[in-house]
Image 1 (cartoon, rainbow, N blue to C red):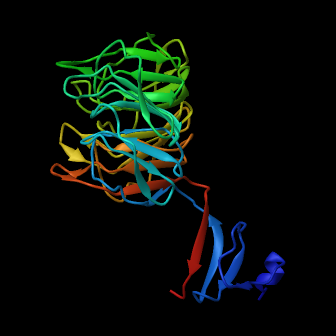
Image 2 (cartoon, rainbow, N blue to C red):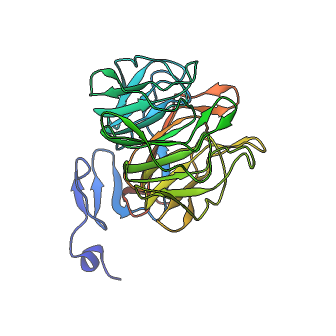
Image 3 (spheres, rainbow, N blue to C red):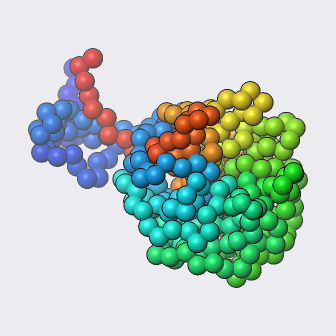
Length: 329
């Protein structure tokens, strides 16, 4: 029988700690933990536990940054918390408390929040510079349950609600002012969305009255919205991350049941594919992270109709590096 060295051309190394940059197929024995380990890649997307928030909350805003530099703010408090990939740190508060607001931003040093429910329904916009929030020019249309896309200087405020109805309104932010641009095709609240800037975005799901939880998906090219293939599972109050051609949606609730779900789907620019579910189903949470459908962060929210969570979960897409421990079972 061939040996590992004959197959791979290397010995199984004995190391006191795991290598910092193992390559696919590398195998080693960790003499400190007394286990045999190897490096592989993930075959499908999956969620794992992240660090817990300091304060449980729901309906927060979130910057669209990476898993190692995320920001959440607002919800049931004025708190802002910053994530370094391991733990959350409380930083300076929002100027105006709000729930169900829109959010945009590159990471935990650069973000924008706008609209939301105070009360009243708000137009207020605030900009984050890594230390403080500063109030800047207002949205044209007051609304809550909207979604944001883009970065601090180039963002969209998409759809959402005013008292009594959803609005199709879409506004573009140039770093100074909001301008009304092309409306979405299906007005909705509590939707998911994301994008790289105010010229490229995607939205999915949400509540438009009938059906209450829809799977409708639209893409934005800087001028107009185009309807594309629907999600497999329509829902509202869900999270989203990614860009126009590579999006991830997760969690939320089916308002017609109603049931809080952990379902996760990824979009490749054409179709939606079901991925591994969240470990804990949740709705009305902060969702962010990643510039594609291979990374996401689900933060806090409701895990049942009366219980809020501090838990965060991190999504790793198929093909990502993974260290495995070998056992004799």
